[in-house]
Structure formats: C-alpha cells, structure tokens
Image 1 (tube, helix red, strand yellow):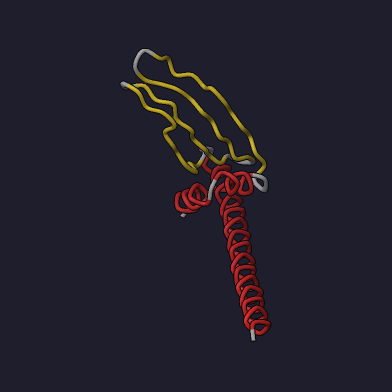
Image 2 (image 1 turned 30 degrees about the vertical axis):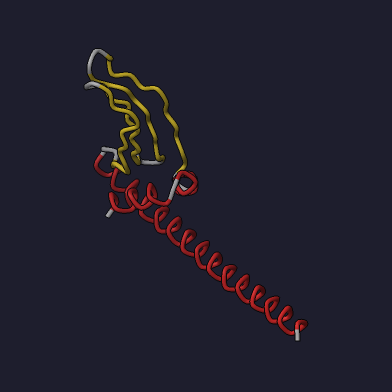
Length: 128
C-alpha cells in the first residue's frame, strides 16, 4: 500500500513536470512570435524612415529624473539600423549623449527581449 502511494506521488510529480514543460514551450513559442513580429514591423518602419528621411521612435524611457534634469533612453529605427541612445538634459546640465548603441534590424528584437518583454511590447505598440 505505501508503495502505491509513493508510486502515485511519483506519477503526479512527473505529470506536473510535463505540464510545466509544456507551459515553458508555449512561452518560448510566444516569445519567438513576438520577436518575429517586431522584426517584420522594424523592416516596414525602416522602409518608411527611408522614404520620409526621418527616424521612427521605438520607445522613450526616463532612467533618472532629479530637480528638472533627466537621463533618458531613446530608441529609434532609421533606414538600416535600430539606434538606442542615452542622453542627459535639463537644469544646469547641458544636453549630452552618454551612450549610443547601433543594432542591425535583425539583432534589435533579441536585445530588446533580453531587456524585458514589456520593452518589446512598448516597441510593438509604438510601431502600430
């Protein structure tokens, strides 16, 4: 009798592990779909930026804000690249660029996903 109970618990654990694995596979599939969707939209946005000669905003995030001065991260898509810039401005601080990252359009969605799904969703929303 105790053998069956142990055996039943073992079976339950295996079944739960398979359900969790299935969930993770679905999550990976959803992430891959979101990455591909962003790649497609970036291609269309790059074509539009090329046609108009103006970059298209992907996202803006204020990193730090203090007494009228701010440090902000801005991502845009140009004709061939996605560009992420961190700059400071306001108050007694002259506007200056602190960082600049340039990505190929196929690299950017993976980088964004590593930073967080919410940031990827923000990019998709701004490209709609």
